[in-house]
Image 1: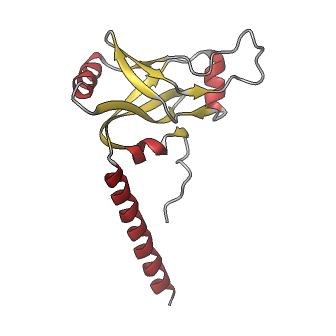
Image 2: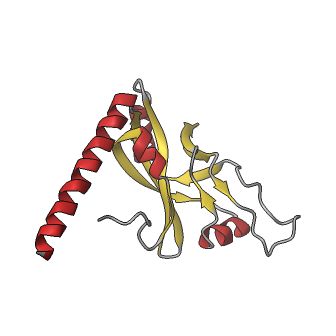
Length: 158
């Protein structure tokens, strides 16, 4: 049975995005953070629910991602929790993303934040929104797979 916990190194996982959207293509982007933000991210104080990314003047920004204020910092030096954050991508990737999300029904959602070496990275997904019946179908498939695994596990014990 698959665990609900994200793999080691992943700080925040947007599981709701995979439920609400069909992910067509993924991209890895660097994340521009201030000092107190990176300390909060390392502490795991990040929430991606409801966040999204947009292309603006040949740059990509992450909106509504909540990074809690760093507790050991004074109020003057702390950051705004939901400020827009710049994402670092190659120009070629930005043009590809822009072309994909201009199609009807496509959007850019962050899937997870993780560390690669010392650098914070965001996995972005170019996604299409799911209809209610698509979500129900996915839930039914997942339940059927879980039942099959349960039966196989009980047979192997006997």
